[in-house]
View 1: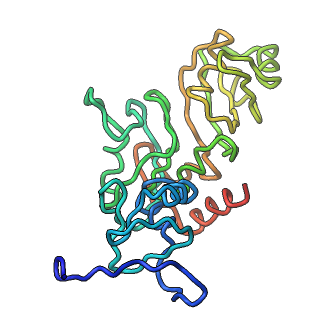
View 2: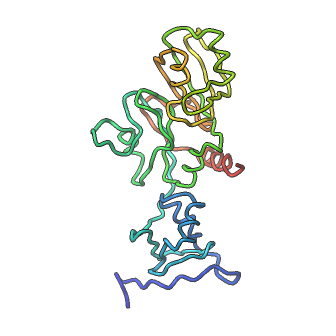
View 3: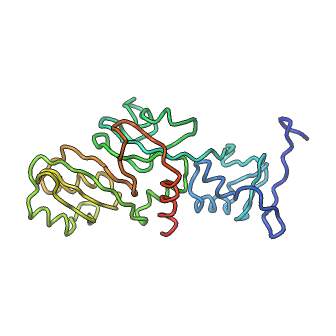
Length: 257
């Protein structure tokens, strides 16, 4: 029986004789923004995914054009993958929605396209600098995972000069309430109130907490490098799409982990 003038075929598992056309089901789910491919495999194995009304549990299964994929009763649409880099200004919170109706970073990228994109990680309200948005669920999960050691560089302005003794304490690693905070590099900039700090750990407010632990107030905090991306020709409050080369580099960076 036809439905909406289109007949859905029963899905067929991938085999050596199956046609190569189509997209792997786990990739389709990831491209729909549900989760990473690895987690999509878990959903498939658990029988959480239906294709054309049939539960599919076979990993490596392929879907073609016209197939209907559902998760929890919702039809998934594999969107065009979008990658956007924002130079976040102060005063915006990193969330897709705020019950208190404060300004969110989503306002700043609303002209980036029709696809649903989300911030990768977060910057607190007072922190400025680079923030990546995408609907590539697999890449987002990979970049946010602590084990992938994604490099981030910040410019920090303090309320008073950082002493040499405290400089050494930070370099050696500080024990905070949630464990040891290690930095990769630390350097003085214009004066001893301004520093550059390179880290890969992704704990909440980690840069601010490192300096606050030693009695300093962070006056300004700006993320100037994220995963090899920098702020060149990107004014504060503006966004730009990543180049194909940048996207390939990000994916290659994580494929080797």
